[in-house]
Length: 344
Image 1 (cartoon, rainbow, N blue to C red):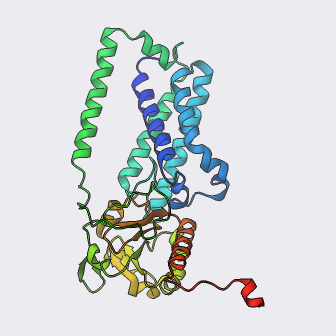
Image 2: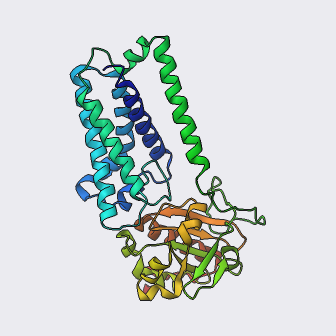
Image 3: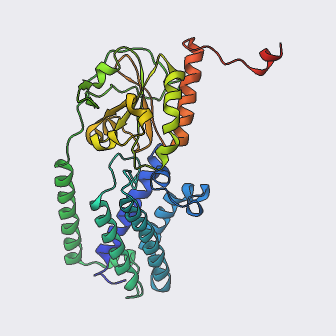
């Protein structure tokens, strides 16, 4: 590995470590598999569980290997980034409104810049692959062998990258502000002492008739289950038919369906119309730390989050069952008769 290739290798290592650690720290590390509709042969449980570790192992091998071994590692990294690029390109071609959760939990929707980013990563990995057998030292060896001028250049490049990152971060739209709400005992957050009941965000939703309501107002009378859905999201189709059933089943808890914009809201199935509100540019989804679509969060009537967020159709089903069980325990819903009572 030559010194000329070293900055590109360090870039790929940084991306792989950031991605792997982000997925491992995420409450749902495999959310991207469902959001991007990864084909079943590539979405088995071992692959879902092992992907973050594979990224971290490849990051280490990129640093320590040389010669033929470096060429093999470079090929694996290139294949991985090509697979990511294919999934992103396919999602954009299908006009799917999803978050790839590439670096852990995120509500950022896949867009053209996501595609450009992944193209650049494939080019970088291909460059490292092409030069994988150049030189006799590993990147770690090249780092050790750097002279004073080499280290100065490398530190300068890292400083420039850091400043650019800070500028980009600073120019991002700020999340909607939240303020602390009244203290109250947990409603449906279960017995988990680690669950953080954050304040319901101060965001406004728009109804289909153009009326704006603060989310705090919508939850003032009763708790609300908010479902973040999209008409272009394949996973959402498993949730659509159940929304009216859940609305009846969970009463007095209300059910809201949040769409990203008016076009999405108006494209929802007709049986969801009475539940749909527009969460412009996913302001609420971002504020509660959601997982793209489909996802759900339970907002308490006391101005605090009462459960979630959760992401994925299967997880939402489990979430609704947990809310139902909690309501039955509190006596808000009649208990479901069991088999023994029928026999009696």
